[in-house]
Length: 202
Picture (tube, rainbow, N blue to C red):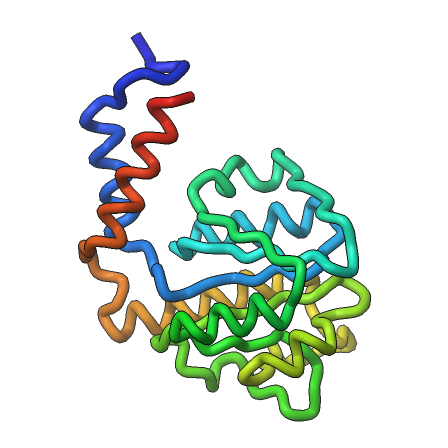
């Protein structure tokens, strides 16, 4: 009989979780700042989880959290650790203190091509609000800005598409560097135990 509600997980399920966590990129993060469309928030989560990111940071000081479109997220948010922030500067500073370089996806004069960034280093990429973009406070604290060059009339991509493009490049670089091979650590073991505990407590 299929397991539906709580209770001990089967060994196959645990093995599946472990196999996914073995490839998780614990030092690569996505930051969502004041997105207002639940479709976009869900799509960013889905891309983050699909590409193996372990964490998404939500910064909401200019808008209300719109939630997630469940049809778009496909419940992938359950497998990504979420941290909530109400101050963009504090969020960026905390990530930097954890050893991450913070890049804002923004059409700034100083922005560099996203393909020219070394994504093999611990990094976080900030996706700003659909209309107003990344906040001034976040831009001031970020280590740099990245841009996805356009070849057509469009000035920029939809925020969730842009997030997917950037993270895809980050994973391409990491695969080439051998960083996506199965690996284990104390932090990953802690993550596995948290997943199992949560699923068994449903």
